[in-house]
Image (cartoon, rainbow, N blue to C red; front, side, top):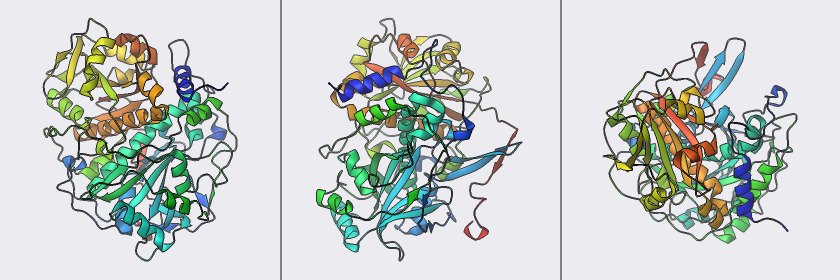
Length: 542
């Protein structure tokens, strides 16, 4: 007899934990001969080359989040291209002496492996027929996969009662499992969260709004993008993650689904383009495919999600433009162990991670709020060093207090729903539970993202990816806020799961740590050379 989806997911999560005496299973070495190509290309089609932005949107730091100051751009090729450039495009190239060279992107990724792909359904734009496209960030181009009959676009616009377009995200699990083995599925999911936040921020700067279509099933998304009928190279399939509608921010009451008759019409479209082969050989991590199958999302009733409506903490604010923060975001590889932050900077950063109505990125509405922040405060002027906890959903507070150590003081701090659990120097502990990575202890502060887990999975196993999306969205906020406050951040996927839980006093799976993050003064690697993101394109495209 087969096991239930929730059982399979709980088994996967337990088996892919790191422990001080045993890490999650992987190859144990990097097989450079099979390193995946970081760029998916659909061969056999003529790409639509996109223009690069001649001038970035004029928004400032807080305009990443707020909407009232961002003028609405028309939907045309240049604006859609700019939206993609500032969300899924390249941000720079790095090279090391000896010839190694790699691209960085606006959306961060575990190990810079980038399992996340973007697909779009566009209406007719500037003489181009409406169609289904794959975005190629290397060429900054749209690869046409299917043409849409004219009535498809009008039916989509009529359904949403708004102009706009659809954008979906998929994951190629092999890209991450090449390096990280069985734990890779987790990283793919929180990379999707980073990408969702990147899309939401970019849309906001163009005066648009990203809305997740949460009632669609995984099969529906696959149908819309022709994924089921695509001839994938073995182990390199793109798995559908989510679909969003991008509309003018003033649009009201966006439906969260697509009519069944329109879905059936998409299933009849002929799709073209053959996905390139990314590796010459692969390792089959069967537990990933089993867990992904168990987490497949069914259709769900349509509905919106409501959050709190409190005002943003507005100071201190960066003098840099919002687009500059996006373009200059980098992942730190080492911290100096000296840089401090003020309490005001710290509170302002944490405040941006709280979901609010009408405020990007969380008003994309991926679902209810499940994730809270365990914070190791090391070097924040005006705050005692120690363990703190940011409660992002007030309804969970009584249960959190019951579940954690009785010795915690739960002292309420001012400005945000932040509680001091215990004072003390936790630099070594932060590094130890982050797989002995000193970057977690030499920072100004480090974070463990703790999600309400067992009850969520047992009730709705398809929410497993969504929990990681939430952590990735939080991570993207922290990345940009670190840039805004003159420091750097970095995500940490390697940590000893149950050591975090023991630190909190957790004895079961009621809450689980899913992703770590740390912020501090970066030590730059002077061996690296930086080149412009699209220096490789012909001169007439720059």
